[in-house]
Image 1: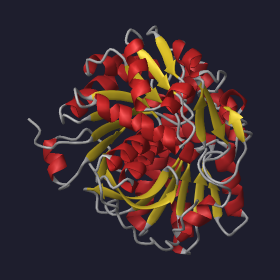
Image 2: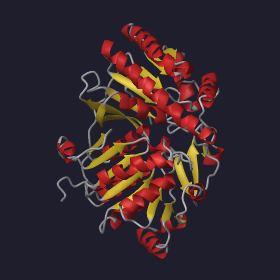
Image 3: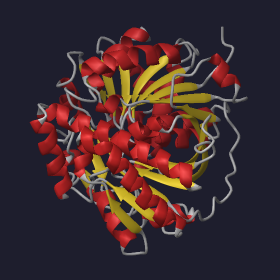
Image 4: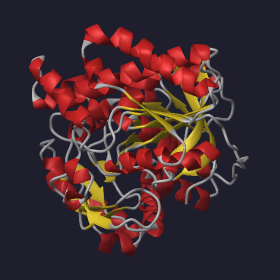
Length: 461
């Protein structure tokens, strides 16, 4: 039955989050392939020695009903590979709401498919500046550097997220708005007491349907990984959380000598001209765009009129031609849908979608979908005329739709760049896309010089 035994199979609720998990598995010494469409056993055979697989999804931008159509078959696909662990990978800032990206709905589906009464959630990702203490989530401003750490409901960016603004730091209360399942917590005191104490606490709370795990550091993650590994000796374990789950399991598997190799990565070097595609309205990405523009990059604004179907064909042709011209001149180029949260294009986009009959909940989802698909079609036109070595995508919601337009079958990691945002190689049947170097970053990832670093292939600490 286990023709392709796997240590782990995960579903990423957005594209950038999926590459985040790909990175931490690969860095742990686990050969991992990220698929952009549901794989079968023949697909796995194309990657000898694969130990973990990911499936890049879009559920973070879906309604609960859409999530049912997406996640039931996705989870059944992963289940068919008989992995030891199955992980529903969410953003480290726990982006979700009852109407969109509902993590509670994902848990309901996963617990049914994997026949698991209690679902385990480990949201912490200390390597990204994300911490959970007594159920409350804290996040650093940005994922690298020494940004200030904020409780998530006071975070300058996440508290103002256009789709899922963080208004509650206690994740138990946040999730209770998304599911009727009973929720409890394995708190820091128990985590500090070690694996045996946690297993006892799980048994004491076996009637609970969801258990959160606190975590502040790598030691806590290792302990959580040991717990998950122990539980998988009986059956596949279904868990939810950030890429901290991958780091936790990697640490536990190394300690158990299940994995013992380390991949060596060559310096990827500079790849000029760099093409940046940004569908992000994060202030972190906004500052990166502004920094790059003052340091030699060229900017092209994608106007909000592309929301109108009548304008899309001409806009795609015009913008692609402008990008082609700049790239042929050797200019590093940024195509952006906004620069920060105050860009007037955001309001213009919302006004158009509002007048087209959509409500507030539908507007943000439709905006990501339309922008993402338009961006993907622009890239396809550019690649027909210009040889591009490396593309940087900014924005988790839009990049998943853009990547779908490119016909990418799978991704493998080339080298680490920023924590949670590795440099990847595209695998595709399209000769213009196959072999492309791609970097996908979420809105909160990286310092102001991020684009410069990706251009030069330099690792961010």
